[in-house]
Image 1: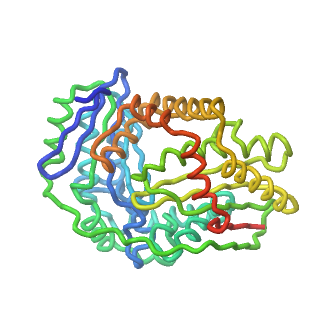
Image 2: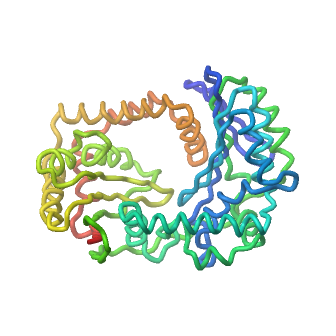
Image 3: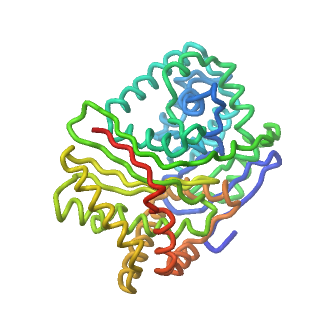
Length: 409
């Protein structure tokens, strides 16, 4: 057990377990797999997300209804998500149902039967999901921008896939992807709840250890080159939508934390972010203005999104460029640094109070780094960032020659 009360174990087949005992009637458990849409072959576009949908549609011993009702009949809630690099199945439930949840998760992950009838039904659901994205330019532009930044690379492709590729998938295609990417040494069982670790281990061994070791042997496709581009697309929308940004640091890069801090200052969730103050509060140009930074294992993406009236796009861009220039040219003062650090630390602390988020965060950290930093250590790292580091990062990431722009109008 470490300082934060996290307990770790590795099963014989390589599946890792991390647990934090926490008081409360509700427990949270997840299985995170280091496999996402970037692990798809060109002929498999959208298959990782498709599997996340149909993995609940029946196993060798359960029909779809029995999978869903196994936890929901006792008040639990089960869910899943797919990202570019991971897939997660997780649930919240009353603490007395730990054993039931672990047994169900093992059955879903290792014994899904993918009945063809259920596959065809779920294809229609995902096609609706794709169409709803196309109807929402404020969401679609994020996918299109990532495709622009990582052009020609699997990490740039939309997680949802395309209707054409989706329609052709059969059970054999899904099983092939699972065999290749759902490796036991790339799985973490993560838990936050009021149960002794010895009990959790007993159940995890019982339900997960019977499956054979399946070690990953393939490596992810290395990144290709990047050239900044400016693209305008005509869309039948009431307002213009725009993202400008650049490739950014990987999750292991020492400059990741300074960029997270810088992102928070520039366009983070706080209403006092520089872009919100300049564009929305001062000029009333936009309802939604935000910046984002998504780090991946070997790269990252930074961007600034805003929606506004077509005639205000140019003025909005000038204001954004001015705010970026300030961060590049003038180091933050001591008081500004203090406020920025405190704001980011409090956001992290609030996130850690949510037990479901905490469970997924510690699972991700253990999956990628084989450990979890205590919150105090994370806060120390935030506090150690200085103004010169922020300025250096601003000049690297906000280099106007490297910023790509995608505009819908």
